[in-house]
Every structure is written in structure tokens, then in C-alpha cells.
Image 1 (tube, rainbow, N blue to C red):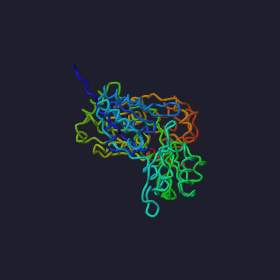
Image 2 (image 1 turned 90 degrees about the vertical axis):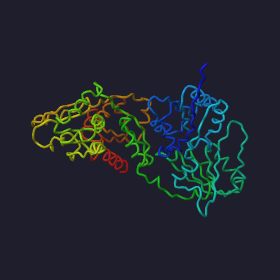
Image 3 (image 1 turned 135 degrees about the vertical axis):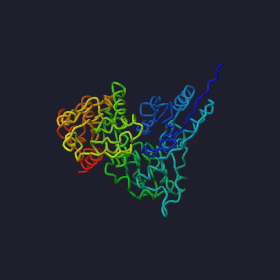
Image 4 (image 1 turned 90 degrees about the horizontal axis):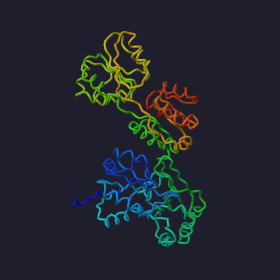
Length: 487
């Protein structure tokens, strides 16, 4: 009889919310995992690190949707019996009130190997993002992390009165529901009623909110879960850094293709924004599966110029070259700084980048003459370049380098989208696909487009209040978004 060899379960800490706080090891394991079992509090963008085809299992506990711990344990055990690498992605650190110990014990009992990958704990990261050090000379030389959550009718296992006498900073996790009782017991234990308190909701994320109060007013303060509560002298400090980011508290919808959105997401997160990704476009292979593009690359010496109108075509074309020397004698034009930067990754400097990032500007700046031009582009695109350059004597060979497709879009996101502060469109196709699915009524107050072609598409759908980026690239899109939201 064949022996069944179980896989390995990795208990990975996802950190408190900011995806940038995921460890390198955690990211590496996500990219390898066959199965990822994740919590509700894990930032959803972390799942983008998963390999294609990975099975994603949501076991997050939500109001009205409790997932018993024994069921989660069974999911891990069953997954390990059928898969090689299983990641259990848990908010914060798996061994800091993450019930990682219980899962580890269950795996040991089942004879399944596991490893623990520590994560950044919300107990220290969340106060830090709120500008509160948990220790500070003259205010606190120690800190205690404690849970304020009680399971069922179990006896309260925290001696709050003794904790009050211990001194130092008290960090309470999962304590919002019992904050009045916690405050009473700490005061009865000797803490001053005026002891500073800070409650940080959704700490380290773009929608982070800090409420400052005192111990005597903690019970009546309008605090919602999930919040990390910091009690002690350090809570009076406000070493604000994260709160100064210009997009903090702003919810931004981006509609770029999933494969292209990472750079824009990171820029917006770095500015403090909370990003909602709704891909309205997907980049797919051409109908002939790159046959025409491969032939054009093989015969590139026939051409005088190659024109790239989009960064999407660049890597797809260059993968068919042996190296950049194949382009010897061939000049390169690019529409947009982003496209030029993509070309530069292959050690090629574009000979022509028009000052305005539209086809009309390239045609206006293109040198007169005759010869042959290769134009690798999307299956469906405007014909300004082949038509106008053809009139001046150039022979333009259009080759399909990729197709833009409409991905599935979740209509249940409509409420989140319309409640957001802004939405961005980086292409005409994304604008058309999005509005065909959701309609104009789903747009938030601010709509930002990357350039005139995208803006025209929005107008054709009846959008009259869109703001166009001053420079028609991703940097211009972000700058216009920031300035518009901070007027």
C-alpha cells in the first residue's frame, strides 16, 4: 500500500494590515503555496503574491459568520493530506493572540509537519504608525500586551488591578467591547482616571483612525473594532508621521489590469491611501499566440523604426530578441515616459518620446522620410499612427502584440466603489469596460483620467466632471489625484 506523505503547513504572520510589513519569508512562501488559508484581517492585496492556481480558503471570523477553531484545524489537516505546501496566513503574529499555538498542537496530533514564520505584531506596529512609542524614556520602561476579549462565560483571566500596579504601557488587543469594564478595573487598581489613552482603528492601513481620550472616558468614547488600545503616559505623545501622508483616510479605486497595478497601488499606499483594486481590463495573448510578433522580431533588421505605444507591448516583443544588439540600426520611438522606462529595462534608450503622450504628438514629431516601421500594439487600437505616417510615405506594419480583455468584475463591489473618495482610469479600455459593467451612477465624486483619449471615452458615457492628469502618465495621474483630493 502506498504511504501518503503529508505536506507542510506554514503558520505565517501577515502583519497588522500594511502589506509592506509582510516579511520576505512570508512573501516567498505565498508565492510557493498550493493552498492558502487566510483570516479576515489579512490585507486582501497579500493574496496577489499567490501563484496562479493556488487554492484560497477564507476562514476569517466575521459577525454572523463564526468559523470554529476546530474547523480551521481540520481545514489545515485535510489540506496537508492533499497538497505539498500550505500557508496559514494570520493577521499580526501567529503566536501573539493569533491562536497559532492551538493550530500547531492540532498539527502535531495529526502528525503533520509545520513551521512558524513570525509576523509584525499589531501590539507594537499599530502604536508606532499612530506616532506612539510603547516605551519612552521618562514615561515608560516596559509594556504589557493583553487581550481584552473573553470567550463565552469563561472567567476573566486578566488581573487588571495587579496590571495597574505593574506600571508601564498597557496595550490591549480585542478589547473594544469590554473597554468600560477594563477602565473601571484599572482605575480601581490605582491608575489615575486622567491616564492618557489612544485607540487606533485599522492601524497601519490607509483608513487608520486614532481616537485620544483618558481612562475615565474610555468607556464612553466612540471606538469601533478592530482597535488597538494604548494606555499609559506614552499615549499622550503624538510623533505623527503616518498621519501627514496626503491621502490618509482616502479610499481610492484603481481599475488597471491586475498584472500592471502593483506600481500604482504602492504609490498610493505610500501616500497613505486605502486602495480598492477593481481590474477593468486584462492583458491576454494575441489570437495567433505571438506567432506574427515572433516573426517580426526575427526580421527586425528590415525595419527603420519600431514604435511602442504602450508599455504592454515592450516585454512581449523583446522576449523574441536574442538581446538588444538585434536592434542595431533600428530606431525606437515611445509614447509616454512609462513606455520609455520599460524599453530602458532592455538597455535601449528611445530615440523619440513626444512631449505629449498621445499618438497625434508622435505623428507631429516623427521625422519626414520613407522606410518601414514596425508597430506592435493591442488587437484593438486607434489607427492614427499607421494612417497618418502612411500618408507621409512610411510603410507601417501593424502586428498584434497583445489583446485587452474584460475580466470578471464583482457587482457586489458597487457599494464600496460609490462610497470611495476617487476612482482612476489609466486607459480608455478600462473606462469603457468599467462603465459598461457598473454604470455612471456607481462613480465616486472624483474621477481622474490619465489623458485626453481616456477622458473622451468617459465623456461618451456621460461623465462630465472628470479631471484629466496634467501629464499623461502614471506620475501625472497620481499628482492630479493628490492635488484634487486636497483642494
